[in-house]
Image (tube, rainbow, N blue to C red; front, top):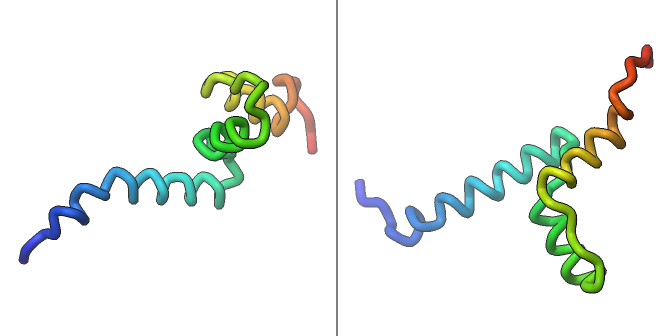
Length: 70
């Protein structure tokens, strides 16, 4: 069985795309897509760091850590 060198080189790209799709299905935001959006739609605004981006997502989804019933 021969492996196509071009296909082998694209494995990291396919893995990133699969991971992004999995995150989207799970409801998690995609940082790379966010960066593309900020660069194209808001070039004058600085982008959040990856950590700040996910912290903002978690805070928006679950609040500030306070326990809640529903």
